[in-house]
Image (cartoon, rainbow, N blue to C red; front, side):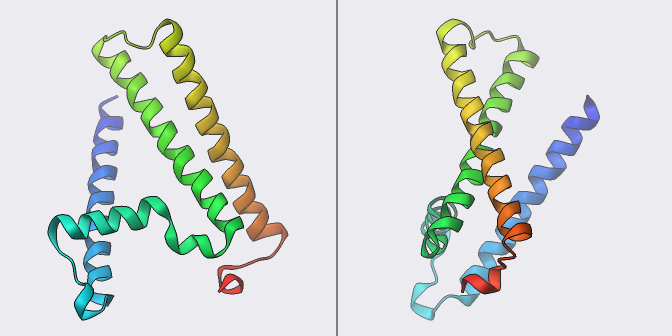
Length: 134
């Protein structure tokens, strides 16, 4: 169990490090009047990541990416809450709350799986590549 916690901590640290580097590169590539720092820069990065504005040009790709992203977020939240309940002994997922929670987690998992299947079909069966979308 300790290995899971260590591995998770390393993974989260790597993701945070990657986002910090990505944000720094993103700011370097922006126009001189558009270099935002601090909270405004984080707000802009969060808006970019959460709304997928760039992917909206191709609605098919946008729906696919949104299903994968939001399905993963739903599964992450569900797993975190179940882990908190299990490890800390706090019982808050019971009765109707559990049923609603379980439905949300199941829908998130279904959206994630459907998004991955759509992505695989798009890449393998239809032969459509990223360069073809531009």
